[in-house]
Amino acid sequence: MEALRSDNLSPIPLDFIEGKEFTKTIGESLGESLKDVTGVSVLNTGSSISKPVIHGLYGNRILILNNGVRQEGQQWGSEHAPEVDPLIGRRLVVLKGASTIRYGPDAIAGVIMIEPEALPYGKRVQGKWI
Image 1 (spheres, rainbow, N blue to C red):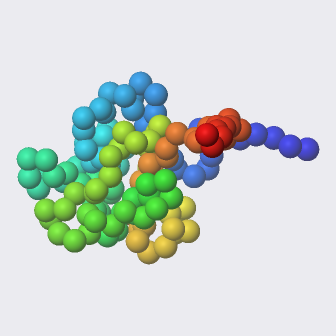
Image 2 (spheres, rainbow, N blue to C red):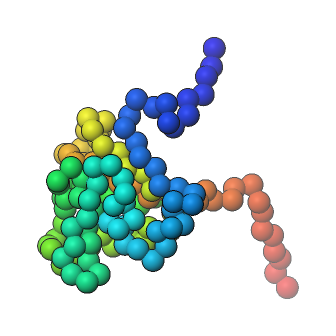
């Protein structure tokens, strides 16, 4: 027997920003894009520097994954914001709670995942030498 489970029925506490909500965040930083997610706030340390804060923790206690790659530039000091473009993805996912332990001690507050558009596999490009 097989069954499909939709994301909103998952026991893991996930928050998504996608679709129209995602397009509303055009021109905003990662922190500003996530400020409407429950448990997430923003730490502003300059005119264009904002860091996401999950349940009061920020910096090296939040893991940011951009297409599966750890982004750690925001950990160096108060003048360093996450060096990611949130618009590169198709959706932003915020993972909170005990399920973040599988990502290691860097994710004690939560995990922010930037999921990009899927690559168009199956389409071929051909050429020949002249």
